[in-house]
Length: 455
Image (cartoon, rainbow, N blue to C red; front, side):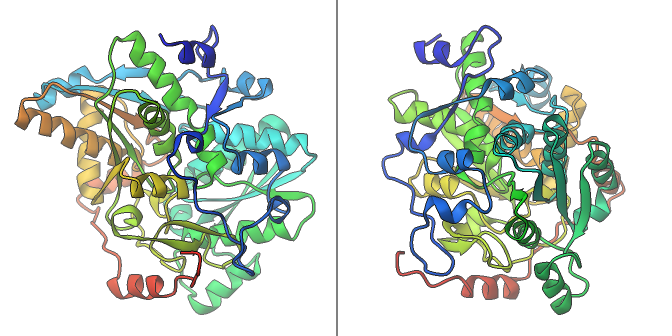
């Protein structure tokens, strides 16, 4: 085990610091711009939304940020998460490849999301914040923040994308069990929501719309801050406990991946598994192929433009440079609600521009097919989002079979599907369709991107 790994892990193998890939990138990330002036924002511009500790992490170029002990105390409930070798899946595929998966479904919320929800709640509590406002797609982030709010005694208000709110009532119940309030977005509670409903009375919602509602609430209430479950640098950094643990666990198995796979929506679980391996490669370690798998109905990495755009539909957020389909783009209502974001995390977008990762898009029926095959081999029913990573891992294993290559594949199983049974019922009944986005709507959204001279 390397000295770096020994430093980062204590006797319980829980990381002592988060990893910041910015320190190892060959170029700095493009600046975040003020939505009014289009000039780089300062720390004070973010203060209405985030506590200062998270703002400092957002702009940090330090390689490692120490994890506060109260956060690690909560992490101990499920970290380190297990790394498994999928031997029965290997046998079912008749592949010479070795397949490993890091299982984040063991957290209280059933996904990777508490890895950042817990520190975000902690830092807000430390700054005296009383309430957090947020958005959620499939409900995993909302569940995680509700759990973290219960741990640290914070009120939590969640705006859940309406189509997911209707599809996943048990997620709402779980949030309420932890004391959070959950409403369908777009709602009548905010100016942003009312404006959308005025123009589109039957809107199924989007993450961009829900973000606008949550940001509006945080910006207009002194006792409230905003919490985001993906996209931003500090969120991606918190998730790197996944990849750091995986490196140590692969070392224990005397193995190392040739291919790392993750599903991508906003980019948090993908970054969590991939960034520590990419960072090791940038510092002279073994080269790995890193594959981001996204839904073909919301293909920001494979179809989006790398440009400055708003993070929300109501244009309340700063502008970030990312792969985007346009902030007004509303994807069809497929079941992987956590992957229905119009943009990709700026750091994930940048590493793709630098050629450090590759991306591919999959239809949901192909992903559910892979998820069921995995469940019947390995026994764990995956979340619809995680099925995209499984699809990518299976395709890589089948490639190894065709090419006769004995490679090692690692993917992140970012959550279980126990709250997504209706999606599986629909799949088995043949009711699950491969929804396609409207090309005209996409073109209109892309044509409406902000004009930024800095590009």
